[in-house]
Length: 605
Ligand SMILES: NC(=O)c1ccc[n+]([C@@H]2O[C@H](COP(=O)([O-])OP(=O)(O)OC[C@H]3O[C@@H](n4cnc5c(N)ncnc54)[C@H](O)[C@@H]3O)[C@@H](O)[C@H]2O)c1
Image 1 (cartoon, rainbow, N blue to C red):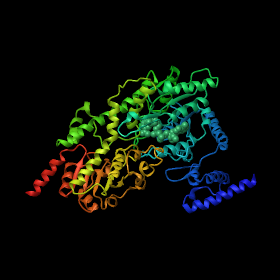
Image 2 (image 1 turned 90 degrees about the vertical axis):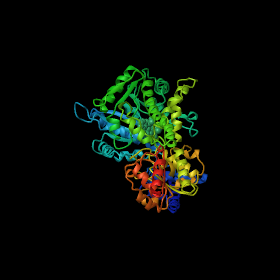
Image 3 (image 1 turned 60 degrees about the vertical axis):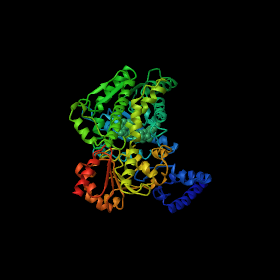
Image 4 (image 1 turned 180 degrees about the vertical axis):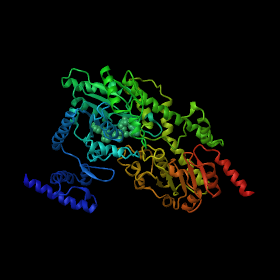
């Protein structure tokens, strides 16, 4: 045995040398600091070398955080010690009268929700009332979130200045928040909050009907919960789900698991969806915001209402309690389909405006003064974020696959998603037209896209319309560059082989995408613009609103095509660009032709 360990450690050291040569091993543990881990790595490497795919397999033993820190994924033999650690912390918390809450999935929503619950103080005693365990499956993609959380470091990057101190306070000072990878912590829970993802995967671009809901993570989580929680534990699903999921998918899974354990009572299962908005109000959009909830039976309904009143600001933002979970689930899907629809509906009017000398931005401003129509908004190059592109799909899919209907009642919600998903393609057409008007070709042209996020002043690129713009123009042969003042990375491009998951990148809908892994988001606009033949203002980030046309032309080294996707340019700036010899095109802004003719007349006279 000793000999085997020595041999394996020797293999590990040899491999380390090889990896050093490839620049990979820097953050792997050394033999002195972590012999057990090294033996483990060695064992794995030995197997992998024999399979001839050492590098890939070594990395499956690690989970790498966005800053590049590597964490060794725990082995089964470590699970029992981890459970002992969690149990002793739970016992101490219970002796102080705290309720034990497990949050399953510490992603964008779960990490912040976990901190909000951990920060809760009992309204009467003023003392911390909850001890929270953030539980994350130890996958290559996500395990790193647990060690980071246990250091008091937020696993999510948020613009909201409240997130980082809140997580640090709860973990390090109040000691009301921990992370674990061992789902046995569910055995200790009074309440479980489920914040795992439930995606809707599209098979075609512009036809969401061929897509399907990905229920795997949610179903697996619910099964584990059913197998482990105490019979009187409340399980609250916050994940946005296909309507019917809580009652007709999750509840039966839990009931079966309870029956197998000989538990005769019904599981206490509830639903209350999140309305979280990334950005500076991240925490407030969870804690100080209106909630809707429901339970599978009256006891679950009462328990979820009590829990939400304890942890959220329901005095300032009243709670709506619905009769059945399918109603709470449908509320989320309808409110996001409504939003997606009012954005998609303006796409046809945007084209109408472009072709008939109308500025849709001014039309929208004029409509907004009517209080009844004040939420009308201009759609940019697409409708991104995690929720709006998928939620209508969950409703469409549920109608057929959970609720069992065959007829086709969905016309508007489905079409809206298809329109929003493909709106960015028109930006590529406008760019091509603008370049042609200047006697240039898109093929081989250097084009700078400004703004990769899905909306202004956030560092969130999920399903952003800008991605479609970059992909289409790349397919057409343009050399794309990207600038964004809020982002350091664009994972959808730079990690397109594995992000958001292998085979799920939008690259699959376009040709000629391989080179996009080399795109780097630039932060110096003057540098990014040097030599560019076109600039696309894709997102109204604050720093883009006041850009000076003289400077842009100077930095580019001469007149260029200017494409405005979001009503960023006022008429004075449009005029100035044209005077400087630029060609200006914009989504929904047909009046540009009029400005162009005025400038021509001025020059003649
Ligand atoms: N992010 C938003 O802006 C937003 C807004 C409103 C609602 N929502 C909804 O909230 C839900 C969660 O979204 P998110 O953005 O936090 O997703 P996310 O992908 O950031 O996080 C989900 C987490 O769950 C983990 N997970 C998956 N399976 C697990 C398992 N079996 N056990 C433990 N952990 C597991 C994943 O590893 C990941 O860390 C979704 O339904 C989403 O639609 C999100």
